[in-house]
Length: 260
Image (cartoon, rainbow, N blue to C red; front, side, top):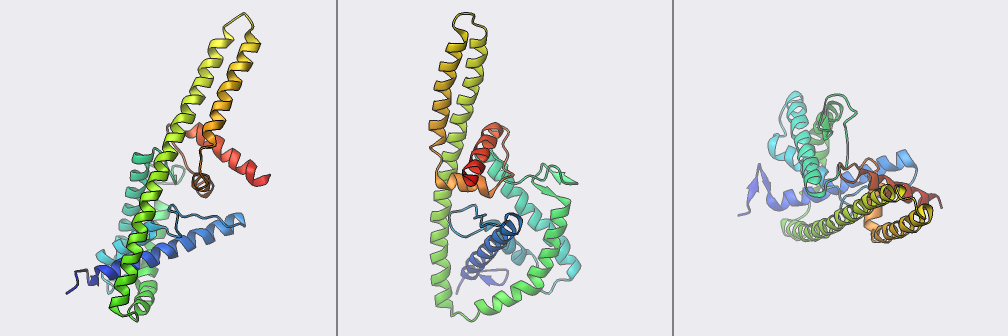
Protein backbone atom coordinates (compact mmCIF):
# COMPACT_ATOMS: atom_id res chain seq x y z
CA UNK A 1 0.00 0.00 0.00
CA UNK A 2 1.33 3.40 -1.01
CA UNK A 3 1.15 6.41 1.30
CA UNK A 4 -1.47 8.91 0.13
CA UNK A 5 -2.33 12.53 0.96
CA UNK A 6 -5.75 14.01 0.10
CA UNK A 7 -6.39 11.20 -2.37
CA UNK A 8 -3.00 11.43 -4.10
CA UNK A 9 -0.15 8.98 -3.72
CA UNK A 10 3.06 10.67 -2.59
CA UNK A 11 4.84 9.71 -5.81
CA UNK A 12 1.97 11.30 -7.76
CA UNK A 13 2.37 14.53 -5.80
CA UNK A 14 6.11 14.53 -6.57
CA UNK A 15 5.32 13.98 -10.26
CA UNK A 16 2.81 16.86 -10.19
CA UNK A 17 5.39 19.03 -8.41
CA UNK A 18 7.74 18.39 -11.34
CA UNK A 19 5.09 19.09 -13.99
CA UNK A 20 3.84 22.34 -12.45
CA UNK A 21 7.35 23.57 -11.61
CA UNK A 22 8.32 23.12 -15.27
CA UNK A 23 5.05 24.69 -16.39
CA UNK A 24 5.69 27.66 -14.07
CA UNK A 25 9.19 28.07 -15.49
CA UNK A 26 7.74 28.10 -19.02
CA UNK A 27 5.22 30.76 -18.00
CA UNK A 28 7.94 32.94 -16.46
CA UNK A 29 10.20 32.60 -19.51
CA UNK A 30 7.30 33.41 -21.85
CA UNK A 31 6.36 36.45 -19.77
CA UNK A 32 9.97 37.69 -19.74
CA UNK A 33 10.23 37.17 -23.52
CA UNK A 34 7.03 39.18 -24.10
CA UNK A 35 8.49 42.03 -22.03
CA UNK A 36 12.10 42.04 -23.24
CA UNK A 37 11.97 40.28 -26.60
CA UNK A 38 14.78 37.94 -25.58
CA UNK A 39 15.18 34.66 -23.69
CA UNK A 40 15.72 35.09 -19.95
CA UNK A 41 16.05 32.05 -17.69
CA UNK A 42 13.66 33.15 -14.95
CA UNK A 43 14.21 30.04 -12.87
CA UNK A 44 15.66 30.41 -9.39
CA UNK A 45 17.30 26.99 -9.64
CA UNK A 46 19.81 25.78 -12.20
CA UNK A 47 17.27 23.53 -13.91
CA UNK A 48 14.13 24.64 -15.82
CA UNK A 49 11.99 24.79 -12.68
CA UNK A 50 10.03 27.37 -10.70
CA UNK A 51 9.20 25.40 -7.53
CA UNK A 52 6.98 28.17 -6.14
CA UNK A 53 4.45 27.23 -8.84
CA UNK A 54 4.83 23.53 -8.11
CA UNK A 55 4.44 23.89 -4.35
CA UNK A 56 1.66 26.43 -4.84
CA UNK A 57 -0.27 23.94 -6.96
CA UNK A 58 0.35 21.09 -4.51
CA UNK A 59 -0.95 23.33 -1.71
CA UNK A 60 -4.15 23.85 -3.70
CA UNK A 61 -4.56 20.15 -4.48
CA UNK A 62 -4.25 19.03 -0.83
CA UNK A 63 -6.48 21.80 0.59
CA UNK A 64 -9.22 22.19 -2.05
CA UNK A 65 -11.43 19.25 -3.12
CA UNK A 66 -11.94 19.20 -6.90
CA UNK A 67 -15.75 19.29 -6.48
CA UNK A 68 -15.60 22.58 -4.51
CA UNK A 69 -17.58 25.61 -5.70
CA UNK A 70 -15.97 28.34 -7.80
CA UNK A 71 -16.29 30.84 -4.94
CA UNK A 72 -14.68 28.45 -2.45
CA UNK A 73 -11.77 27.74 -4.79
CA UNK A 74 -11.28 31.46 -5.42
CA UNK A 75 -11.20 32.42 -1.73
CA UNK A 76 -9.15 29.48 -0.43
CA UNK A 77 -6.90 29.49 -3.50
CA UNK A 78 -6.18 33.18 -3.05
CA UNK A 79 -5.29 32.65 0.61
CA UNK A 80 -3.19 29.51 0.10
CA UNK A 81 -1.14 30.78 -2.85
CA UNK A 82 -0.59 34.16 -1.19
CA UNK A 83 0.63 32.37 1.93
CA UNK A 84 3.05 30.27 -0.15
CA UNK A 85 4.34 33.42 -1.88
CA UNK A 86 4.69 35.29 1.44
CA UNK A 87 6.55 32.45 3.19
CA UNK A 88 8.88 31.95 0.20
CA UNK A 89 9.70 35.67 0.11
CA UNK A 90 10.27 35.77 3.88
CA UNK A 91 12.62 32.76 3.78
CA UNK A 92 14.70 34.23 0.94
CA UNK A 93 14.94 37.60 2.68
CA UNK A 94 15.91 36.06 6.01
CA UNK A 95 18.61 33.70 4.77
CA UNK A 96 20.03 35.66 1.83
CA UNK A 97 19.35 39.31 2.82
CA UNK A 98 17.66 39.97 -0.51
CA UNK A 99 14.12 40.66 -1.72
CA UNK A 100 13.70 38.85 -5.05
CA UNK A 101 10.35 40.47 -5.87
CA UNK A 102 8.85 43.62 -4.41
CA UNK A 103 5.21 44.76 -4.34
CA UNK A 104 5.92 47.75 -2.10
CA UNK A 105 4.45 50.16 -4.66
CA UNK A 106 1.34 48.03 -5.19
CA UNK A 107 -1.96 48.79 -3.43
CA UNK A 108 -2.56 46.89 -0.17
CA UNK A 109 0.72 45.00 0.03
CA UNK A 110 2.17 43.16 3.03
CA UNK A 111 5.88 43.97 3.46
CA UNK A 112 6.21 44.00 -0.33
CA UNK A 113 5.92 40.20 -0.41
CA UNK A 114 2.28 39.93 -1.44
CA UNK A 115 -0.33 42.44 -2.61
CA UNK A 116 -4.06 42.56 -3.31
CA UNK A 117 -3.89 42.62 -7.12
CA UNK A 118 -1.64 39.57 -7.34
CA UNK A 119 -3.60 37.73 -4.66
CA UNK A 120 -6.81 38.28 -6.65
CA UNK A 121 -5.00 37.06 -9.76
CA UNK A 122 -3.87 33.94 -7.88
CA UNK A 123 -7.50 33.33 -6.88
CA UNK A 124 -8.61 33.38 -10.52
CA UNK A 125 -5.65 31.21 -11.56
CA UNK A 126 -6.60 28.75 -8.79
CA UNK A 127 -10.05 28.28 -10.35
CA UNK A 128 -8.54 27.59 -13.78
CA UNK A 129 -5.90 25.31 -12.23
CA UNK A 130 -8.36 23.18 -10.21
CA UNK A 131 -11.22 23.04 -12.72
CA UNK A 132 -9.38 22.94 -16.05
CA UNK A 133 -5.63 22.31 -15.89
CA UNK A 134 -5.44 19.68 -13.13
CA UNK A 135 -8.13 17.35 -14.57
CA UNK A 136 -6.35 17.41 -17.94
CA UNK A 137 -2.87 16.89 -16.46
CA UNK A 138 -4.00 14.16 -14.06
CA UNK A 139 -5.78 12.26 -16.85
CA UNK A 140 -2.47 12.14 -18.75
CA UNK A 141 -0.49 11.21 -15.63
CA UNK A 142 -2.87 8.30 -14.98
CA UNK A 143 -1.96 6.78 -18.34
CA UNK A 144 1.53 6.09 -16.97
CA UNK A 145 1.84 2.77 -15.04
CA UNK A 146 2.54 3.25 -11.33
CA UNK A 147 5.98 1.62 -11.49
CA UNK A 148 7.11 4.20 -14.07
CA UNK A 149 5.52 7.03 -12.11
CA UNK A 150 7.59 5.95 -9.11
CA UNK A 151 10.82 5.82 -11.14
CA UNK A 152 10.18 9.22 -12.75
CA UNK A 153 9.05 10.93 -9.54
CA UNK A 154 11.94 9.78 -7.35
CA UNK A 155 14.50 10.43 -10.09
CA UNK A 156 13.12 13.95 -10.30
CA UNK A 157 13.16 14.30 -6.51
CA UNK A 158 16.83 13.27 -6.39
CA UNK A 159 17.76 15.77 -9.14
CA UNK A 160 15.64 18.47 -7.49
CA UNK A 161 17.39 18.04 -4.13
CA UNK A 162 20.84 18.16 -5.78
CA UNK A 163 19.81 21.30 -7.70
CA UNK A 164 18.48 22.88 -4.51
CA UNK A 165 21.72 22.15 -2.62
CA UNK A 166 23.84 23.61 -5.44
CA UNK A 167 21.58 26.68 -5.57
CA UNK A 168 21.87 27.25 -1.81
CA UNK A 169 25.67 26.97 -2.06
CA UNK A 170 25.64 29.46 -4.95
CA UNK A 171 23.40 31.89 -3.06
CA UNK A 172 25.59 31.70 0.04
CA UNK A 173 28.58 32.58 -2.14
CA UNK A 174 26.50 35.37 -3.66
CA UNK A 175 25.83 36.71 -0.17
CA UNK A 176 29.54 36.54 0.72
CA UNK A 177 30.47 38.49 -2.42
CA UNK A 178 27.83 41.13 -1.64
CA UNK A 179 29.29 41.46 1.87
CA UNK A 180 32.86 41.85 0.55
CA UNK A 181 31.78 44.42 -2.05
CA UNK A 182 29.82 46.41 0.53
CA UNK A 183 32.84 46.46 2.86
CA UNK A 184 35.10 47.74 0.06
CA UNK A 185 32.51 50.33 -0.91
CA UNK A 186 32.39 51.58 2.69
CA UNK A 187 36.19 51.55 2.81
CA UNK A 188 36.26 53.66 -0.35
CA UNK A 189 33.95 56.24 1.19
CA UNK A 190 35.87 56.37 4.47
CA UNK A 191 39.22 56.57 2.68
CA UNK A 192 38.05 59.41 0.50
CA UNK A 193 36.66 61.29 3.51
CA UNK A 194 39.92 60.91 5.47
CA UNK A 195 42.14 61.92 2.54
CA UNK A 196 40.12 64.99 1.67
CA UNK A 197 41.02 66.47 5.03
CA UNK A 198 44.74 66.20 4.37
CA UNK A 199 46.62 69.19 3.00
CA UNK A 200 49.86 67.54 1.77
CA UNK A 201 49.89 65.70 -1.57
CA UNK A 202 46.16 65.42 -1.24
CA UNK A 203 45.16 64.77 -4.85
CA UNK A 204 47.97 62.26 -5.49
CA UNK A 205 47.20 60.26 -2.33
CA UNK A 206 43.51 60.24 -3.08
CA UNK A 207 44.12 59.04 -6.62
CA UNK A 208 46.46 56.19 -5.56
CA UNK A 209 44.31 55.03 -2.62
CA UNK A 210 41.07 55.11 -4.54
CA UNK A 211 42.64 53.29 -7.48
CA UNK A 212 43.82 50.48 -5.19
CA UNK A 213 40.40 50.10 -3.60
CA UNK A 214 38.61 50.17 -6.96
CA UNK A 215 40.93 47.43 -8.23
CA UNK A 216 40.12 45.40 -5.12
CA UNK A 217 36.40 45.99 -5.74
CA UNK A 218 36.73 44.77 -9.34
CA UNK A 219 38.68 41.68 -8.26
CA UNK A 220 35.87 40.71 -5.91
CA UNK A 221 33.32 41.46 -8.63
CA UNK A 222 35.08 38.99 -10.91
CA UNK A 223 34.22 36.23 -8.43
CA UNK A 224 30.61 36.40 -9.60
CA UNK A 225 29.77 33.19 -11.42
CA UNK A 226 27.64 32.80 -14.53
CA UNK A 227 24.72 31.80 -12.30
CA UNK A 228 25.10 34.91 -10.13
CA UNK A 229 24.99 37.16 -13.19
CA UNK A 230 22.04 35.19 -14.55
CA UNK A 231 20.07 35.74 -11.34
CA UNK A 232 20.79 39.48 -11.42
CA UNK A 233 19.51 39.56 -14.99
CA UNK A 234 16.50 37.32 -14.28
CA UNK A 235 15.36 39.30 -11.22
CA UNK A 236 15.84 43.00 -12.07
CA UNK A 237 13.63 43.96 -9.13
CA UNK A 238 15.96 42.35 -6.57
CA UNK A 239 16.50 44.56 -3.51
CA UNK A 240 18.44 44.39 -0.28
CA UNK A 241 18.56 46.52 2.85
CA UNK A 242 22.28 45.81 3.19
CA UNK A 243 23.50 45.53 -0.41
CA UNK A 244 21.29 47.78 -2.56
CA UNK A 245 24.13 49.98 -3.85
CA UNK A 246 26.23 46.94 -4.75
CA UNK A 247 23.29 45.25 -6.50
CA UNK A 248 22.61 48.39 -8.54
CA UNK A 249 26.25 48.54 -9.60
CA UNK A 250 26.24 44.88 -10.68
CA UNK A 251 22.96 45.36 -12.58
CA UNK A 252 24.44 48.34 -14.44
CA UNK A 253 27.56 46.34 -15.35
CA UNK A 254 25.45 43.40 -16.57
CA UNK A 255 23.43 45.78 -18.76
CA UNK A 256 26.62 47.35 -20.17
CA UNK A 257 28.05 43.92 -20.98
CA UNK A 258 24.77 43.00 -22.67
CA UNK A 259 24.90 46.08 -24.91
CA UNK A 260 28.63 45.66 -25.67
